[in-house]
Length: 491
Image (cartoon, rainbow, N blue to C red):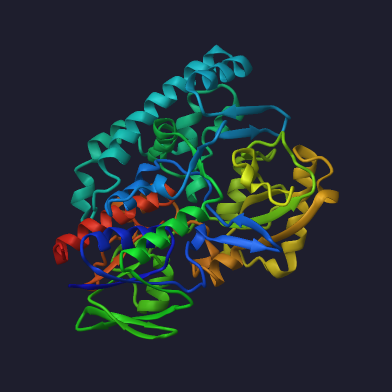
């Protein structure tokens, strides 16, 4: 029976551990932190519990599969609550759009605020998104791309769906109102991309949300992590916390184990849920053979996330509120390209209590607010500028959606790109690994199987098909196919 070490316990690591264990592999899962989840871990601060990262759950069947392959069900452990509306988009001019839940009501809302032409444009956009979804997600999301040829055979359909356009350009051509174009091209930011440069393939997220809905895990995303940890433990997966990988050990071009902070772990193979750029630089010490992984590799933006609780219950604040800055293209250019400190961020505000009453803790409202910022290639000293940026965010929230916020905050702390770089070991503190531009998609992303070393595999945001919870869960499906092909079924 083959022994596999999985490095990292984000959704990718937990998923591949579950899938390979169901195939009979002996699995050792190692995690640097004292808790599991990676970006999806839970923070507890002064008695308040906060989701650290992903809170938008879509395509929940992908999580359920991790249980059904062990004759269990996600619903036996976690209650998924539908979010209504999915998002409130709040624009600089004071207008807002409640988006999601029912298609008919969303189309009516667009028609009432922006006119018949833009409502018709949205229906056309959604039809286009469905075509991309059927090709890029249903057909290709769990298909390994090991060669250029495996990707090029799909080029005719990619050309028909105009993958060469950016998400923003593909959206904007359907609307006369620029606020709508900004709102409905925002999805790349959920997976680390700039809407002005991300390939329009990622428009598939539009239809994916309508296909299965948008949910929140009752009690927080951490409840899903806890359920997966219990599942893996009960199925015999050895979980080693406070165990950081220091080196992947290779002999005669084959993986033989992992040197860790707690000693050597021998194995027949290694699956890295660790950031690939970090892994090649720090754990392997050599470059990827793929040209696309070395020439002008573009990493995602960084994230500044403020977690806070308030005495006041802000009952009019929706579960997910996206607050757009007055600037759009220029702001994103400053973040992704110029990489300079910004003073007018767009914000994503998460208020779980709007959907889940259990997240109203001690009669206090709990929140996090996320701002895209430059990654650490910028050289911004967050130790010096973190408090300044926190004040900017609080001022925006108080002005736009949360009156008297400053006097009502009872608990707060924040993380910066330094947290992602130093605690989560992501290159340059990027929030989502490499960007989802076309030249870093499918075969051009980091491979799910190493081209350099036998027995080395990857899952997670920087591998195919990409970031976001559905994307990361799908990377494990791709990697499972490759490992079972290489090693056979160990049952």
